[in-house]
Image (cartoon, rainbow, N blue to C red; front, side, top):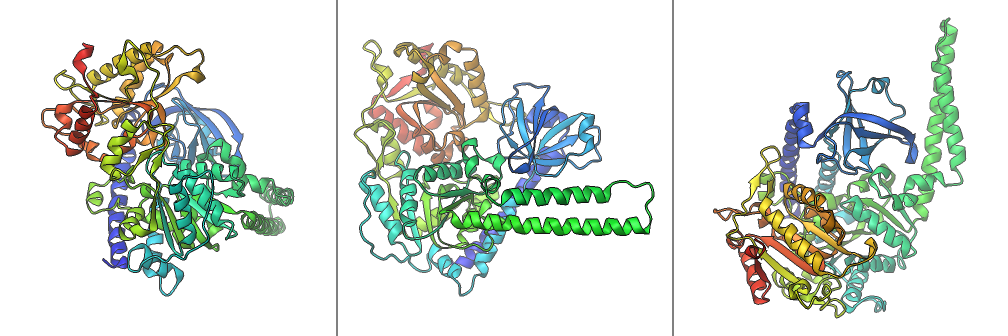
Length: 640
């Protein structure tokens, strides 16, 4: 299919996906009573303002706390746009701000407006999730620009990306870095030789980020500046930190509330505040504000002369503010010009400060998690693209089943690696997992090409002479025939399995009992408990809170698969939940998600599930066969 046709089809799918999200928001927030929104975790009400301060970038920061439904699960996350509303002043338009420092019952809400309205003082305040159309708008614009590109570098790049012409590579002197393995070195070499496109394929634990940082550093010896981007703030922050540690001068674009604290020093806002020209800028702004306040001050006698004076003072204030904007733009340009790497999320590449900037090379990390239109936003600003990712792990999230069926989640990384396999470098040595944990993933997703580095290949938990199973790197704990059936929460429509959860806790306790006692928390093994279902995550958290003795054995974190992407633990438990007579496994069919879950463990992986249900799917049947071949299967009956 011709690129323009493919992109036009994708735009239609974008409309479907956007419509689905708008409808969901309409039902979830606008058409849902307050009581039900609270029950669903999409609303906090009532909330109280505990503290107000001037935060980063001169934004107002409100610390908000809910006073009822304490500790109840909710959907709020750092970086989300939340609406602050009043039940006393329902006619007032809610204020929108960005959530940060989100915990069970408190969060910080960052507001970019100049001042807060008086109605906030009257109480009865609440927070709602907000619909944000920015991502859709910028993806649509990027795709439309690519479709309309004529006789330009962007058109040439489009033809390469979508397989009309082959990418070009020119030989260069051999790159060498003793800290990299041969596969990583070859990947950097491929980037240096690429004229228009290179791909770094990084399976779990293979050092993709390390390789990408080395490639960026190598390119910066040939180019003055690069653009570095990723779909999420977390991934972008990690790149920013790693590049800074590698000696690269960086600037991070984006809303500070969406960034981790260790990144704030690299933000554009912080660098503006440290610039030599900043005091003069602030003085000019202050004078303009004071002049405006003076002009608008109430006067008892207000005739033609006073009106003329007010117009003149307001005009002077506007001129001063325009001059301040010009000064600020000069400072921004100075900061950006001297930075070797400009970092932002994919959507952040649409920021106004980048409108007139172009780069020879753009690097996109986690490209296999980015929607096609998202990847195209930063690509508009470059002649050459380097994509890094793994299309065998988490795909982009798509809410519309119709859009999904149309291929909306097919990423640019997938398109390029299928069209141009010669442009891709596979990182094949992993430094995370015992080889038995790695083996199934390598077999199912990477054509058996993954190798475990000798330092991790046989690394296990400490041996126990009386309980040999403790140091076994892989276990499948089978609940078939135990009567542990899945249950659906009628409100959230998410699934849980209480019998399976209790079995997991029993197994975990026995494991902890059989391990050597460690004196400090820092010495304890790291443990991750993963379930694809949020309801099961909440249930497991509740059960563990009642078992403090287990928490003395491990450093524990519990989350869904998405929450563990890019992370690792000494020990991982996976609760698969599904158990029914029909063999229905729902979105467990998304095997790429399971690839992520199964490749987080360094020393031991325990998968808990019902083989009778799971074996209806070929992927899980293969996994069960793999476990049986290693004598790694145990029945849940052993724990009755």
